[in-house]
Image (tube, rainbow, N blue to C red; front, side, top):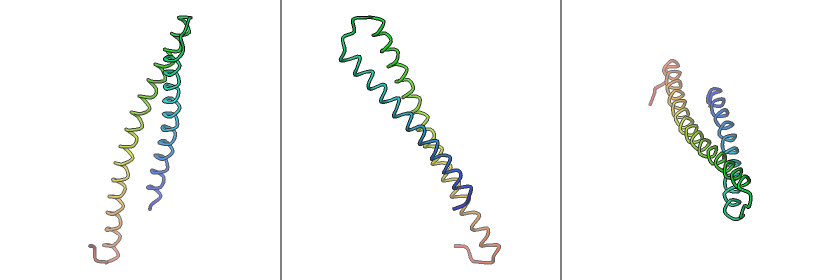
Length: 103
């Protein structure tokens, strides 16, 4: 495995880990706020509005982070496939230059 492969995979792994962590936080917040809205009878309309707004914000972050996570996953898959293809080509070129037979 080349340095390029390792650095690319390392960056993608770190980014994916951060995205999934924040996705879990925002999804947990959305779920907690939804349960709170469904189980508590608010007497103050301002409190209900504040909880509902917080629920919508956390739900929005959850959707956005999920979409970005899917995009990063697809980009990682394509990058790994491209790097493998380029590595195989470089190996074949080294073999040809060394005079070995290529399969």
